[in-house]
Length: 140
Image (tube, rainbow, N blue to C red; front, top):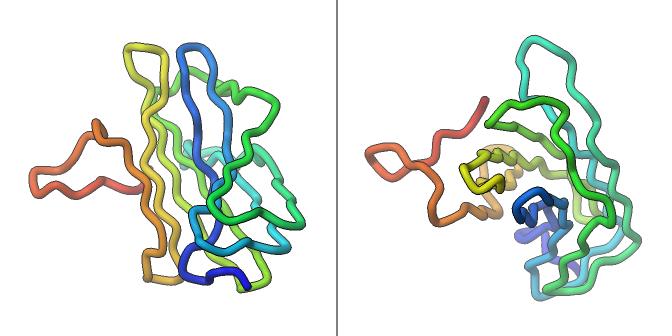
């Protein structure tokens, strides 16, 4: 029952002028009792904004559920930083998601799901900018 090493997380599908959040379960097992609170904490000077509170009783293995409503950024910042608290029956993990706006009016993504200092999941677009050593620059 469920997989504590591969919890569900929030990703995005981004097309020109249309971006939607997607809750994804990449595990070989279903996840149960899911609650994900996604906040936009882009600005370090203002308060965080609750973007969405996802609640699912069950999410089947290898499943992704797209939200019906598009995400519209609250301002013109070209880099967005999100944090999510993900609770399932197996415990609580955190997610960090960074979006970069590109010239095609789409958002590239870098996502990592952590349990303490241990990285459980990583989903980074292939064209994401990297440091000289190939690492991702996480954080705001």
